[in-house]
Structures are given as structure tokens and as C-alpha cells.
Amino acid sequence: MDKHQDDSKINLEYDIIRNDFKRAGEASSDIKSILKKIGIDSKVVRKVAIVTYEAEMNIVIHSYGGNIKVTIKSNNIIIEAYDRGPGIENIPLAMKEGYSTATNEVRELGFGAGMGLPNINKCADDFKIKSTPEGTRLLITINF
Amino acid sequence: MVFHSVVLDDEYCKGCTNCLKRCPTEAIRIKDKKADILKERCIDCGECIVVCPYHAQDSITDDIRDLNKFKFNIAIPSTTLYGQFPLEINIDRIYQGVKDLGFNYVYDEGRAADIIAITFDDILENRTKNLPLISSLCPAVIRLIQIRFPSLIENIMRVESPMEIAARMAKKEVMNKYDIPLDEIGAFYLTPCPAKYTSIKEPLGIKKSYMDGAIAIKKVYGDLIRNEKKIREEEKFSKGSSKGIGWSRVGGQSMTMGIKKYVAVDGIGNVIKVLEEIENGNLNDIEFFEGYACVGGCVGGPLNVENPFIAKSRIRQIYEDDKYVIERTPEEIKELKKLFNSGYLSWTEEIAPRGALKIDDDIFKAFTKIEEINKITQSLPGLDCGSCGAPSCRSLAEDIVCRGTSIENCIFMIK
Image (cartoon, rainbow over all chains, first blue to last red; front, side, top):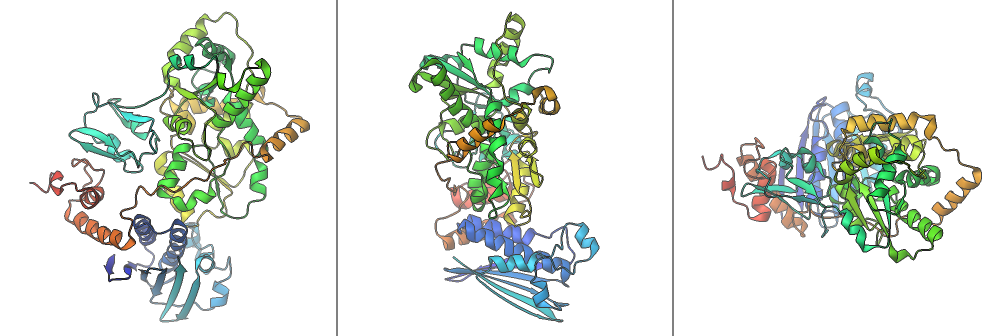
């Protein structure tokens, strides 16, 4: 984890490795623990926890790897999740509850229920998603 | 919180690290070779009592002499008492023994658990938000949520525990039967657990408890065994059904309320792991979560005597025994539902988050401190040996930054 702070914001950054189910969830868990310790409102913490957890699992399961960046400002928290491909073919379909492209192996591990992006969408005050075969970028804003 | 039931007896404490490592809120430090409990973090779960090999951790509860405060005393035995004796012994003889300790009346806690089991489906029916609903039975779990999972407070069911409901119902029953004014009646819980005693002194969700005190089961256990042998004739006490009694073991609540989509977890460490999952939104398809600080559920409470697994097996046998089934008439059920819907069994007060883990009131100052803590943590050996008196290298780093502890407490730093 890398972090740095300037006057008005806090940055947290995590590399996420593909298919690494041993460490999967550690980044979002660390983010959650930091937010709690610095005294962010518990409702906001829960939203960030869900968003970062789903984004992290998406990168682990579906991508070639990527990273998650959290920026805490005085009136909101911005979460950026970036991966290096292969991209989401059909974004409107991926936003539908229950739609999943996860393999059977992944489902046997208890993941890939097709709730990732819909859950993120529910928690976000603003949600932008861009995807090409070179990579997918999620930009989520959660207001205080 | 001002009052804590869990206390340390310095005389027996060797300053070992058993309790240090097991405390779920990292509330223990070893100072000058004695354990010290950080009061603002303690949730009275009793984990330290269970793991202490020297029996230095203990729990404050009342004594039989406290009955002198009232003219008329009711004993309310926890349903875990059913698991403390071989099933061949008639529970009426045990209850007679309880009464012979100096009580005027015995009210079985299982009767109160029955009421919730019968009326509960109404709560779940209309619930679409904040699932799973989290059981309010274990007070240590609720306090854990206040400290470590404040965002889950809105998932907790706002219904009183059987202990509290039993105290209200028992006092009402005695007032009606014997025409005794409320302030002359004392209600004492025979408790398996320090967290319950704390809940009497500092209740969660209500202003004041109807329970006036509690006596640890292990304090009277010997008397109950001796009394049972001497009793010539025992009363027939009014008791709970297999459903209500079943609440004293993990899974009991969900089973008796007929909930299919439930998760039942025992042991405070396991409870923490599942609460993390709930917080991440992974259990949204689950209707009900029952969590217990103690292994096995309340039968594993540190103030019981019997081995938790043996006690749990006995409770299961009772749960499956037709002898303990009580059929309710539709009128009875209607009456109880009316009582439930009147709010008589519900919480009246909101419960607030406890910011005991917060590092600083200012977000940015707190973050600077976290960076410093991370830096110090990296310079420490990472063995989490506990020799410094903190439960892990990371918590020593936190103590250095937030509490002014010296880094020289680490034996590897002075080498």
C-alpha cells in the first residue's frame, strides 16, 4: 500500500493481482479499517467497504490485474478502480443484477454472483465506467 | 461505559499473554507484569476469563445476601441452567433448590424466549432493508458492533432479550398473584455471562432494566447440587417450552423461529469475521444472523460450570424431546402478538456507536498518525510476541503514537 497526504486530501493506493484469492479482500479490508480509525461516518464507511470490496474482487476475478485508489477529501470520497483488460464487452448487461461471466471454478469459490457492478451502483452517488479491451476504469464518488 | 463486570485480580495475574492475544477489541495491555483492561474498549465478553490459566480474570456479580434489599425475591434462571445437570434430574428439583437459596418465586427464562419465538415472524415479514437482521440476544456482540461495526447498528433487531422480558413478565405475574408493590420485588438473574450483568447495570436500548441484579451460576452451583439431594418435595414450576429453552445454544433462535435463511455463529473471533462479511454486503440474501461471543452459544458462558459441549448436547436433546413441546391456542398466540405489537418487548432507546478505536477527532490528524503508526510497525520485528505488553506489533505502534508508550518496551529494540 502507498499513501500520501497533502493539505486537503488523503490518498490510499493498492495493487491488485489477478486470480490471487489468498490476498483477495485485503485491500478493501485495509481501506475499511483506516476509514473507521480516522473517524469517517459509519454509513459512508459501509458504502466505501462495499464498493472497494466489489471492485477488488472484480479485478481479481475478471481482469489481468490492476489497482485501486481511494481519495478522501473534506466532503467526499473518490474511488478509482483500474485494470489492464480484457475489458467488459457489454456494460449495460454487466450492470444488470445476476448477470455474470465468471467461470464455474470462480463460482465454486463463492464469487461471481453477478452482483458486483449493481452493488457498486447502489452505493455510489456518482458512478462512471469506461471499458476497452486495454482496460476498465471505474470512478465512484461517495458524498459525506 | 462506566460499569464493567469483567475485572482482574492482580494477586493471581502472572502477566502472561494469554488474555492479551485473545481480546477481540485489543482492550488488554500488560503493565508491570499485570494485565490492565482499557475500560473504554472492553465489551465484557468474558473471553479473557475463559482463557486465563490462573483464573485471575473474573466477573463481578451479586450474592445471595443482596436479596435482603427486597421483601419479595424472584429468581430468573438462565435457560443454560438446563444444560448444567444430567437430564435424569428433574429440573423442578433444581428450581426448588434455587428457591431454597432464599427466593420466593422462580420464573423460567425460557418462558420469555417462547414469547419472542412466537411473535417474531412479524418483524421479519415487513423487512426489506438492512438485512440480515442481527439478533440482539448477546450483549457482547452488540457492544462489539458499537465499537468495531457501527454501520451495522441499524441491522440489530430492536427487541429486548429474554432475560429482560422475563424480568418484566415475572414482576407483573407476582404483582397480580400476590398483590405486592413493584418496588418491593427484586428480580435476580442466574447468569452464565458477565455481559448480561453489565446489561443490567448499564442496559442497551432501554433506560432501566427490570432486573435488579444477577448471580453467577457457578456461585450457586454447589448449593444446587447439594439441595437437589435433600429435597423431599418439589413444586411444579411453570416452564418454557423446548423452543424457548433451545435459545441457549447457537442456532437455537433461528431454529425455533422457523427461519430458513439464517447464519448462526459462535465464538467472538468467528463473529468478527462474519460481521466483516455483512459489512461488505456479502450476506444480503440472509434474513437473520445470530452471533454469540461464547463457543456453543450461551451454554459456553464463562460463568457456567458444565463443559459447553456437554451442556449444548443436553439442550439439543431437550429441543428434540416431545415432552417439552407446549401447544399454544390461537387465543394465546393472539394475546402474545398483541403484547409484542404494543412495543412492550421492544427497545425504547437508540444505541450509539462507541468510537473507542478512533485515533483522533480530526480526520487529517488521525491519518497523519496512521502513517506514523505504519512506519513504526514496519520497524518492529512483526512477531506479535506480546512481550511489550501490547497484543501485536501494530498495536504497540498505535500505543506509541496515541498513548505515549515507549518503543523500548519492545525487547528486540533494546537488544
